[in-house]
Length: 120
Image 1 (cartoon, rainbow, N blue to C red):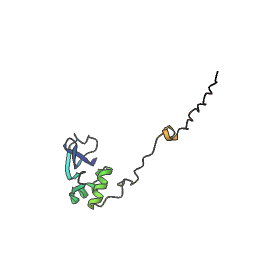
Image 2 (image 1 turned 45 degrees about the vertical axis):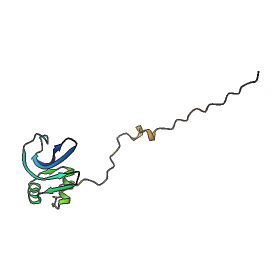
Image 3 (image 1 turned 180 degrees about the horizontal axis):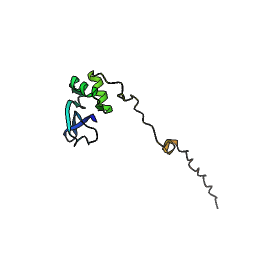
């Protein structure tokens, strides 16, 4: 099975990505690349995508990652119905909300009573 994913390039601290079509079972940096369908610069938000080539691999069943789905959609590639579009909701589910500090019961600070000094 093929996947369309981002492959990191560029120097340290300044990544640039390629949109690579490669075997899904392999790691992005070591998998055999079938084709490169574009590039993405996250600093300038510029995506150069070969629309026809990306469309060809999508029609043949290549699975895009969520970030690639967003980039392809912005480039005007028609996505198949089976592609899950990423949700715009940036709130992730919190696993154990009862453990959050804001949900803990408030501890009341012990009130220190003033000690009366006796004049002896």
